[in-house]
Length: 108
Image: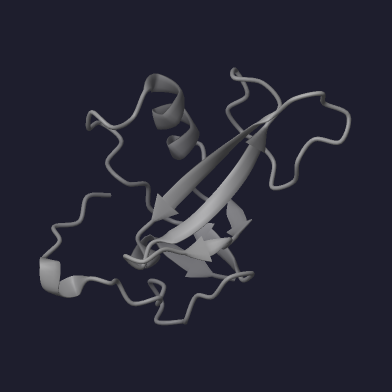
């Protein structure tokens, strides 16, 4: 989803699409995906963002601009679904951070 932002909106309020307050540790369902066709995303990042739609994830942070931050752990670069926990038996793994406008999630 693409929002047209104005400077006066920032920081975004930590309020989901339904008007419920988001906080670190709460779980939220991703209900809208940001515009992933701009130059800041590589092919893997675009695919991983799109795969998040409908997933329920814990909010790990709210950044200084008000975006809800989510982390997923990936066992290998080709892994597109990820997990909310680091793999136990992997010698290495990858972490990706995802940022969402609070209006694009709903607290569960």
